[in-house]
Image (tube, rainbow over all chains, first blue to last red):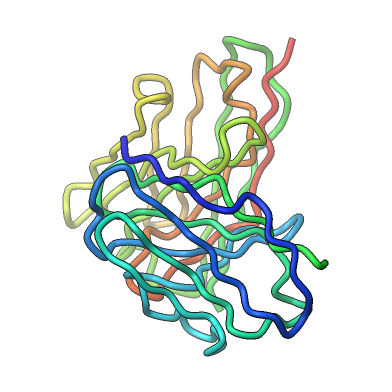
Length: 107
Length: 119
């Protein structure tokens, strides 16, 4: 099984600041990395697929990068609705696996 | 608009069984691979399994923790996906989501069904 390690566990920031979230895979997953956002009481929502492609309707302030084992999600200027938990997911090896999440909360 | 609506969750004793259902709308269900994902405080987000289209044989793959105990099936005539959960254990307690298997930006989740395994 491919393990994904997300860091940091929590990121405390103010609206308008930028956020950089990291995800490291235990083996190379090429560019088959996705990112999800989850708010309390809701299902996860796809933000980024195949490392750097924004899903339909996702604002341009969300961007993804990386390859192999190291990936990042950047939120360029946090809006109030961006405070949530973010998960990475690899889709290269079955079973696809998720990281444990990074919580972005308001400082 | 794509909608996935799960039902059938509830509380069950260890060793018991439960069947979850998911009704899909807003897309061509028979063209889609489908999956179940679960989420719990102890295990986080975890793939349960996926099922291919009938035109590709309709076979299902499972994650190791549920293999041999859970079964995924589909009824394309009713746009429905099912998850049969047998030999349930306490660590199967989770919210179970019905999802489309991601295809680029096409990625949809239901609202989830809570399964609680407790004596």
